[in-house]
Image (tube, rainbow, N blue to C red; front, side, top):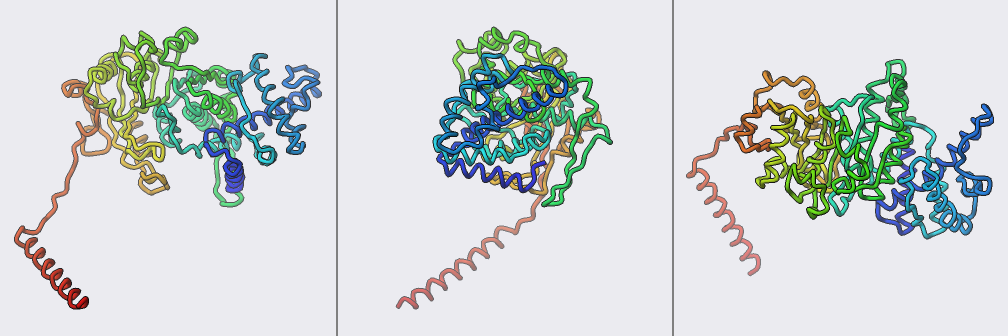
Length: 507
């Protein structure tokens, strides 16, 4: 639970980096991540040492006898002039040495570099991070999510952090099981994978295993879900359930840390462009029918050269547009019967090009397109104002009816501030989805309704909500034209009188 006090600590840490000349939010989070990792390495080493004393069982040491000075508990007491060169020249190279040794998070710390140049900033950052509750399972995950919430700019390739409440809607709609294999081909900070973990903990906690904690400052009560009913699946969850790929090394490191802090000890996170030919070569199992569930918000911007794209994807949809290629990729990565919820720009739903139509036809004729959730354009502010939708589909079979829902409000203002508001369609969207019935949900004036696949085909596979929703317009009474004209003449007369008075005043 992130209390007001913890938020103030993180805010203060953020300010220290800003004042120290490191102003790029992604760089700040990356550097904090490295320091968190250094502390967690030491924490885990100390735990294993204590366990060895109790049981006599040896363990694979993270720090050799001549490396003890590289541990967080040792260097955090150093003065600024000593700490900076040690962390920069010794501790960070040690991170990279763990890559070669085959320990967990090999790719996570690959090419790690200390960007902090001011000795005083490093000391302050180390002291502040030492006070953060990284040993508390639920709190440390929430804490890192709060840190990630400070990412407020989009990347150059159109990637940006997906709002947590939108992610959670998508996860709730798919209802993943603890036996599923979960993937994200453009995982960013790992938000979708983390949300699945949170969903599993909430869903598979018995009533007596739910702990309630009160914020000492606000009095707000938060439920902590222990996931006691997941015990039979713990090994699968820790090392085989979650798989993510990204071509941004910084995002990769942040995603790995995010998952680790949420209880996923060894997530399968890789530096990889999943649209490239190299994906199949390096990860043949994941590239083709390797997943039960895929959740994604792939990059919208940009296009690729045909020679860089896997030929199998181009056979499905001949295009350079990444948003279309990612949908084809997801279909390829899913097992038959596998499910996906994917965010797409509105252009995917109604684009008139041959590739757009080809992709929509593929979804409807050769798979089960289950839902089109229309989102308001402000959902991704302040990152971007692009209009988007969520496609929910199952690989294989055919489409009979498609569920449409018109989300007009998501509980936050649709401007750059994104402040809480009363209007929120998301709970109703989920409720209508869970109780959906093609025979009953036929009123196209409502927020939720079904459209037969045959009608969509007749409309050229158009999936835009406006194509099928019936808008209700209230008739307004207007004054007759001569009445309006009379009022205009009266206004003109008043203006003329005011101008005359002004002229008299000016002499």
